[in-house]
Image (spheres, rainbow, N blue to C red):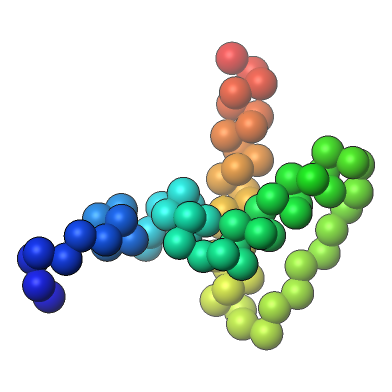
Length: 77
């Protein structure tokens, strides 16, 4: 790999893969989904997410769980 490549996706990568922030910023669909889910939650709705890819569902689940955990931590402090 060329060491001169400057991409936030590659720089923000760890053993679990890219950070949630990078996943959301680099994917228009993920950005839309996160905003949509935030809006639906604020309005008191529940939501079910479907995908043809199990891997994509795993990524979405990780992002959502981490966001919920961060919100709980910020509310308790």
